[in-house]
Length: 290
Length: 241
Image (tube, rainbow over all chains, first blue to last red; front, side, top):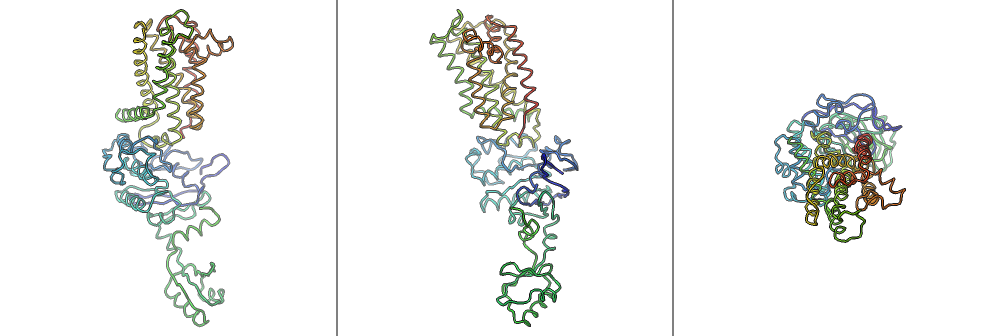
């Protein structure tokens, strides 16, 4: 648990991030994502409970931990007059792991901007520089807070590739974002926060597989309750669309088609499969603001 | 040591890139020294203008570097989350403070050398009455002003800190006996001036350089108090982010 005065930032939070995988922390604003990441980085102390990163306590063992983790802050943490080449070289020196500044700069696609200052970079370039600083640590665990915020499409592709590559080296990447599309593209594992608590936690595949559904439209009114009873699955009417939740099974689709045909109702735009992360997220965090 | 020197290089680079800071560190003290040495408008208690001015200008230089320059840069670093970001590297708080202190000392050595050279050109006698006392005074002054600068940098918003540092710089310059003797101020202001770190530093520097300090013993006590209390207070209240 983490409390700031009377406000509870996170409560009953427990999750693991694994080596070689990208764990995405998703949640509406104020859900506790940044507080949780900052507790892992050692910036904030937990009020109760414990945090372990690489088996170390981020508060007590911060000195040892700082040598092994890479950090990308939400707001950069770079002086406006710092030049790209100099700041990356400086961080390479601070970590002392033999990382070559020019190679890191090339990895994030800023080789043409080495002489530019932070304040002259675009929002996307600033994010890529901030990511480069995390890479200078050659980290075993990387904490990336909103890495694609304000980045254009090409920049996102590059950042995504860097993150995947980082995970492929065995690094446990922990990424906080509120961008659902980005999370779906990057995540191996997902932890969804809502109102300071975790409401879903597992691999992206397992979370999506719990949310099978059949979506369709129909131009003719039919007895929704009777269909739901016949199929033995709940049906929601969402505007002009109907959603049979909990299944995408072919046998159920067959029974559904037969029932609709028998009752003279047409079927349009039939889709069956796992829900998109966005739908799962909306369902789990309904009532919060993204 | 590699990490320390890397951070020291970075600190010096930040100061060197900041034109406003260079103006405060070198420009203003040098301009005041040259101007008031050449324009005979200040009461100098029987000394040549440059002999009278140099200790105060040294005090001003220490105040500029250790308080204004360090304080403003640190305030902005805090506001840009630079300190927070560095806190997640192997640098550590200890090395960061040592690097900042060394950068201040190196800049002070440079600016004092420049100012002393200008003073010699302007006719100052090259002798220093007590070099050891001068070094102790400079060290104590650096501690006092760095403490004040970091206290403001670590507790105020960056923009407020910027205004406050410059405002305090002006107050300490006018009331601290830096460019004219304290006894020319109205008596209540004289008493305030004697308790200010700028006044105390200027007075003990005057004693060390020309052996003409007005309140030397009490000034040492005042300066020692500031040198001790200001850093302790800064350490207690400083917020890193």
